[in-house]
Structure formats: C-alpha cells, structure tokens
Length: 217
Image (cartoon, rainbow, N blue to C red; front, side, top):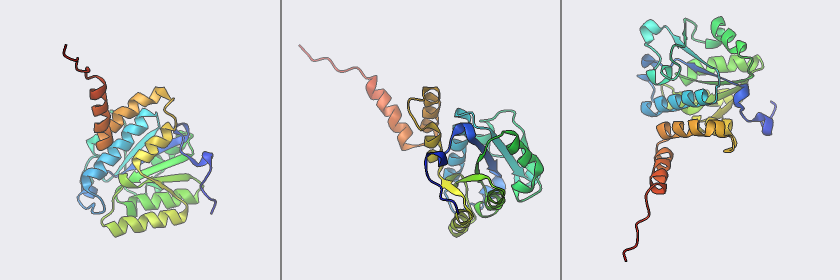
C-alpha cells in the first residue's frame, strides 16, 4: 500500500468532493457509537465547512419514504439542492451518485454517513478499489455499536482509506490563516459547531471590545 504522506497528501478544497450518506432519522435512532447530538453536530459542521470552501457536496438518502428526510441541519446548508434517493445500500453502486461525483472533476473523495459499518464502508472500499483517494470523516459517521464503528474504521484503513475528524478537515482545507477569503466563514462555522473553541472566540471578542476602566482622579 502506498504511504499517505507528504504535502500532496493533505486535503485541498479545490480537489475535494464531499458525499454525505444517509444522515436520516431511521439510522440515527440506532447510532450507539457516538452521542447522537455530537454526530449530527459533526455532520452539520462538515457540511458548513464544505460550503465555506465551495467544495461540491452530494447529498444522498436511502428509501427516504421510510427512512426519513436528511437532517435539516445539513439540507438547510444547501437550500434547493437535490438529495439523491437510492435503493442501493452501497452508494457507489448508484450510477447517479457516482456520475455526480465524477462530474465535479475532483479526485479527493470525502465521505461521511450512517451507518459506518454499512453505508460508509461499502462505498469507501469500492471507491478505493477503483483508484479514488478516499477520506472518511469518522465523527460525522456512526455505527450501531462502538465495536461496529471501530471495526469498520479498521477495515477501511486496511483497504487504504484516510481517516479524519470534521474539524481536522476544515483546518486542512484552510491551511493558512492568510487565506482571508475563507477565514471569516470558517470562524462562523467554529462558533456554531466547535463548542468551547467557538465560545472562547466570542469571549475574546467581548474582551477586546470592552473599554478599559478609567482610573479615578
């Protein structure tokens, strides 16, 4: 297996395409590997990061009439965008999804979804076998148990996948704070989805804007 190292191995927004798979109510009810609130927050943070960097994002569901609509925390980020509904459990066997990915011309495929061990593992392993550079965003995924999630991650790493968390993806896309065209947008994402760090930033702004008390004469 070719080692994944060197500057060219880092994610670049201009080469990335994001696929968010089956972030639906039915799946969420049996996510036990993560706090469900955290899984939703991570997926929403990832979606907002992709929008900030103009990374093409494909949204897909499975049997939406039974499984429910994709979480509004995700679809609201991309208003009016079609959600590709599938019957295939393996997203990468759905021609419409694969054609949408290929149409972007991007080579760095980033995937997150529910469940990790099924709806993420299958397309990741197939896409890797077809030569794609695949990254799995682990905290924007979730499995039916901690074991199921962890075994799936090990299986995908063994197949050649890169694994990251959503905030690491955002930071890797930004890479340099001198990139001011995205700095403001990602700061907003951090405020909304990064809890302590986001609140700390707001506190810093409060302190910077607080007048220094005048000394009494």
